[in-house]
Length: 188
Image 1: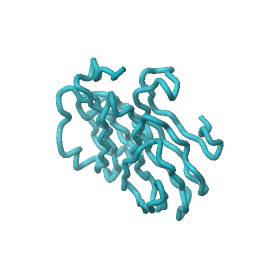
Image 2: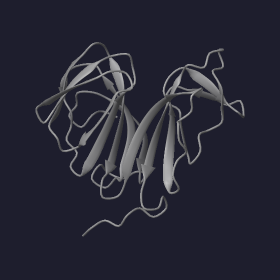
Image 3: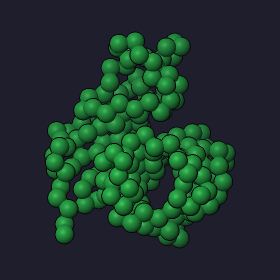
Image 4: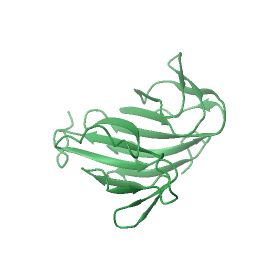
């Protein structure tokens, strides 16, 4: 899907509720291609978490403050902030999580497949497990490719890289609300 400002493209992995507009959605998980400097679109009422997925460095200006991010670095900021990509060392992709703050909180973690996520999801959390690069097989023999995603409370059972290595990162995105089935009530 093209960016709202027309300067790039995004692969939307998930939007909740499905089919909702940007003004109605509660959260969105996407991957954007960063190829050139330029402004980001503003999204009122949404918190954004951005994680660089590739071996590139990007320089952002957020409300006039400069931030430099490298692979797997992440930054959380207000979606309404004046945000601009100032420079990048090469084409890059970023994982972009937008969540409506009065309904959801989000936590993005990157880890190596063989290391595991470090801690189990809390009760009431929904976890999106996103395979970032390379390929792996789950315990049923299904191949996971780059940007495949699984939604569950437990890490999908992965048995390693089907090409012999196992140094491929996963990213887990934990979305939590008061209860996963019943998000916090919106204020009127």
